[in-house]
Amino acid sequence: MITVEELGSLYHAFELTAKRYGSRPFLRAPALSTKEYADDAIEYSYDSAKARVDELIRGYAAEDLRRGDRVVIAFDSRLQNYLHLLALNALGVSIVPLNSSATAEELGHIISHSDSRLLVSLPKYRERLAGLEICDVITEESLNTSFEQLILENVTEHSLSSEAALLYTSGTTGKPKGCILSNEYFLAIGCWYIGLGDICQLDE
Image 1 (spheres, helix red, strand yellow):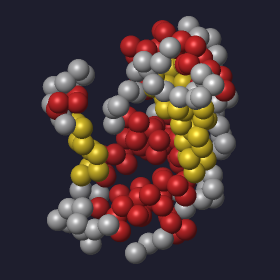
Image 2 (tube, rainbow, N blue to C red; image 1 turned 30 degrees about the horizontal axis):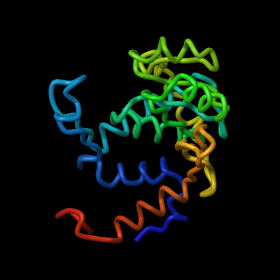
Image 3 (cartoon, one colour; image 1 turned 180 degrees about the horizontal axis):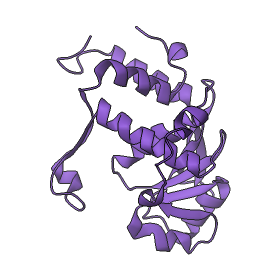
Image 4 (cartoon, one colour; image 1 turned 90 degrees about the horizontal axis):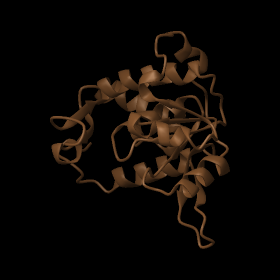
């Protein structure tokens, strides 16, 4: 079985898996969880997810993001979280997921404390988040994904210790506390889970 060291980063692990299992299901949100914004369940195969992730890589590269930057994302519990995580990881950029139900004070603290370059949100949250006036706020739809060459030029190599996400939890002092999660953390959890076996009939 492939090791965490061989995988290197979340995006590289995803890329390798997509090449091997392109037509198989990758992400699925059941109809019950999508009823507010879709008529049915939403599903991505590895191939369709890879195509969308590559589009997002181009869009974020056009925003002049660089390795070590952070981007706040506000997509509730939608599948976009995973696609944007992979796209930003390809560029060496860390995500900062935002709980849209947090108070203005909490939101302001997270965005400011994380020193994020950009905030990408669902359209319904854009005005509220832009009103905090801390960093640029855009929607997914406004990303310019037309520059094909930007993928090869901007996808970067990672170390396992590189930051992949910065998660904020409620703090004992009243302000949210940040917890840095590395590529190694995510990959180790994934390898451990696969090692349990009996996940599905397609186990190898």
